[in-house]
Length: 486
Image 1 (cartoon, one colour):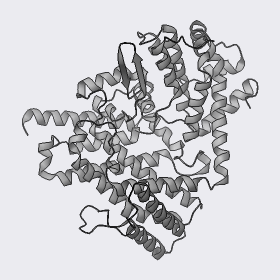
Image 2 (cartoon, helix red, strand yellow):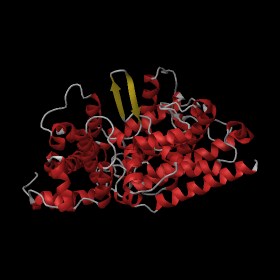
Image 3 (cartoon, rainbow, N blue to C red):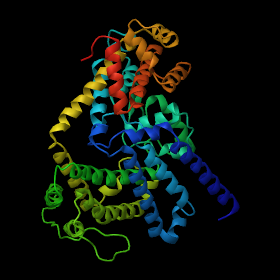
Image 4 (cartoon, rainbow, N blue to C red):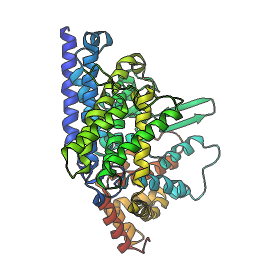
């Protein structure tokens, strides 16, 4: 490696390490300690937290990258990856930590409440009492974005705008998801689209320009983080239901086998059996069948003779987790050309039928078992009602004309005690981002629509900065300050 190249790699490593330091010390990451993993619904219902899920995902991503370099060996230089292992590891680790920081409280119930409420109240934004004109295509597309939620787009907005952390372009690019977040159609052509919120479209354009990514291309690190997310999510969801006593380890193993066979049949492979040796671990010559992996984990768990059902997952991670990590690394090496072109819909663990069926079996079983808990529906409804109540409290402010809304923010005087309290309780960072957006030139649609969009973003940011406990407290506080929201 020549001197210029060495200097470039050293500079990249130093800048990525700065990104890691700032992210680790951010308030948004600390918030994950207070949010439960998907499936627990409320913080007091489980000890499992999103921060632990992020750390597990971080470790999985690190192992995938390490295996990729072991498998490439001397070929790494011909793939433009020589000398970049430490930088690549840092990139996927920080990307894994950032993945969940934009999620609202109450998990999927919170996302549904946020999207459904805005869809029902779109006409009232910014004091508009009538729908947009039919020919205002850009304005309609802009406001319709408020009716959708994208966790990665919100994470990018949270860390860059609300936290004020200036990530390197390559680190920010890891947060560009695989789904188009906004799309515009214009009269003279197909228009344009973005993989982050429209408010951050300038940031996305800048990073794509610097990194040489096309409009629909993704950064190679995205595929690793996606694979790590899939592995971590499937194992942690099942571990949670076992720990909550919704299914015992023996029944879990039997149900996984049945779900796997059914998944293979749906994909057109009814002849495949549990004993077919589809899976390989790195460094192990013989291949494993799923039945063999599950039986091995169950035998080791029963041999330990412990009363903790979650102990089974120590062995499942050794067997299934390592196997999936190895297959993700194999797929990365095998499809390196496609990865370098940034194909948006590529998934490392979906390229092989067995891995795809295995992940689907884990997910489908977890979904079925979660709803055996009689408290789950009640907790989800409680979370949904809480967020809708908070949004109802913000509705009078969203209905104000721009001048009245700005005066409300500046002077803190509202037409009701509840509205005055709502303004005072807004986080300073949320207000700062809104005010900064209002002094920037607007993009697409009219000034009225652009302001209404950012007012809606303010409400999104407000809710996505809460924990479940703080959301419940805020809901109670606002009910006391004004008329009951129930």
